Length: 168
Ligand SMILES: [Cu+2]
Image (cartoon, rainbow, N blue to C red; front, side, top):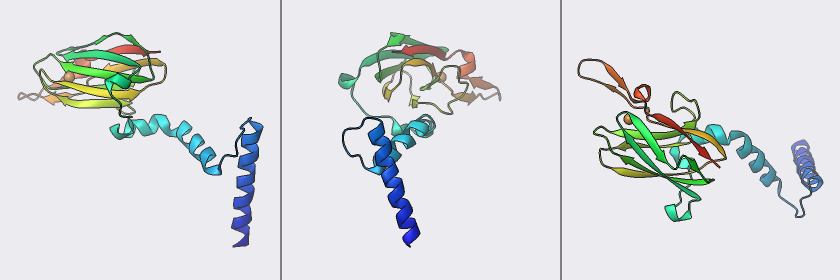
């Protein structure tokens, strides 16, 4: 009972000293330090697991807006260089099949680790995607793979539904 308590106290003291050494003017709680290091190391993986982590903001609150057009078999974006971190994608399907839009790191060949995606965009439909993105190069892609009646697979990504954009 006594030992764990003393360890906790030492850890808290070390945390405060660490923060003071870095020039912090206030007296931060130890939990802040824990939260900070935790999110810094885990953000890239965590954001890919679910779209829920993507912050929700409106086009009016965005730093940059990108008009994205998806169709068979291409993705186009305007502009291709956009200001971040709050990037608002307006994704329009001008094709005749259902498409999706995933934002991944450049060079990704599947949606694992994607920063966010909007799925099931029907022909003629428009869907928004709001993401906070650090400066860098990102890939916009559609990863739908359909099985045709004759058994052939139609791979939207392989057909050319991918492009890169730069977030500043
Ligand atoms: Cu597609």
